[in-house]
Image (cartoon, rainbow, N blue to C red; front, side):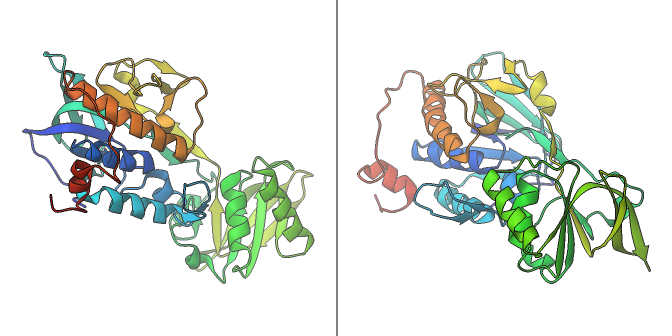
Length: 353
């Protein structure tokens, strides 16, 4: 996988397609385009491919990927990268697309990133998830000092927290998922949520309450109001409960899952029709209101839209045919199958000719 984080070239890179976003849908878009003989360049603001799967929950199990009863989020990303490798996608990571303009001929696009990388693109597929995102942070005096060491907004490696005293904050799926996952390995685990009701899946809430009733974890309603330190290390947090009582909870790490600040960023300025901060697309080829610009995954919206990775994969398959038609409008399209098509098998590298 090529990583061009330091690119400062001024000359434009000629590209069949530029994919904006290297999450699961963007990575599968590489594969679907490759089957049709279309090469892709992939741009992402994050330093590694994988999007939210890699950035926020790499160890989280996913159960609704066809033919994979269970698959870790990072494992899914690794498999998608492997699947797209025969098509030699070029990755441009750690840079954000700032400009997207249609050229005077109306058929190609100028794409410019934050590091000065420029593309002359035949088509663009936006697979930017919910846009750029930042976690909502714990706003307590001194918290910033421990971010990345003892205060965390994502879990990169679950094993780093084994045998530790953990304080998990939040009431959504991420907070409950990690509570259930880490409770068996933690020395002690406390879950704090600002309300008595939880937003997570009912099954997860039920399992969490069973652990609390068994004394395996502690669950409190309230908010963190202060931190306690000793010789430069975080050792405890002060929680003020809904009844006004304060409680000190010893902890080695705080995992805060307050959700994200999704921002469309420059995408909102590119002239495409929006609905509730999402790009409106058709359901034939997942083209936006701007011909030649397509959108797949959580960034798009249409009647009946479901924000599932599985749905995004379907969208990428149809978008690939839309891109092919846009790049070569006079060419007749044929549906071919990887099991029987010599052309596709050659592109995949499974046959010699």
